Image (cartoon, rainbow, N blue to C red; front, side):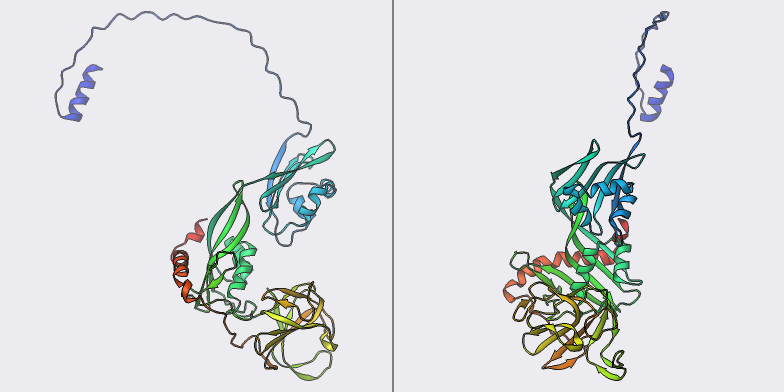
Length: 418
């Protein structure tokens, strides 16, 4: 043993070393002792009255019903009904929105032991089983804000693409609003169009609870590149979206008064389904379910709100200058919509219906310039004011890093690395 070790050292270090040795002592015999000790049997763990328990976490999805969602969480129908009898839980559960996360602890038999959800943006609401009922509680949490970067490609619709990329619905709606003055998302989308988006997401106790504002976005539509960055010039949360060189993305008018729908009748001659004759259709009809929110396409004053012949329930808005817009066949009006009321762009003014001469629920929308009908789908819309000269330096300081993030998304597969 000692001789082999010495050779190894010489071989490794290329030098000779002197070693001292100690004479080996005689080996002493090992002694052993057997010890026997009585051990008390381990007490068996008390059996749970519910047997095995399970934690399940699910996100509320578009199209989910209250009962179907709780069933997916493992909660049986009887327990789901009992939850609606807990005053603190009934309203929040009924108000769940797509993307909301709920956790449930259930037993083998489907009985609910505990349930947690985000009640407000910084509060966790939960219930724990207490006897035959439930005990509700609230727990405050600390929100953390982070930036998320995603990109995707259009294959059928904007919502399908954002779903595929894991982008929240709230962010998809913001994208449609940001680029709505340049892209008609009902008819301008092309297969192969793409988007990149940088947005805020808020975490509570390490879990994402809601998405915030879009900070920067890019949309490539039919090979045309559009970019927008958020800029809050007064730091009051009421900023807007601009191109990277400071032009305002917001047009004086939205291209469409509905967030998402389909055009059922364009601006052209058509055979009137009720009058049974060919007539000029001097507006655009959007098919949508009754109750769909109708938005003001621009800042305006309400000139008329009421019922008028074949138009049914109708709102006429007078905008700055020579513009006016008409919204007809409404099922009803939003609160406060009356003659003389002021509305801002995107404010809800009414709801899709079937009043007047209408064969089905839809919105009839007209756009007039100097009281002459124009096609709202093709007319060039005036833009809002750009960034003021006195704020350009602050704008560039904010816009440059945001545009850099869009460059990163375009040139890498970062969105696929989630």
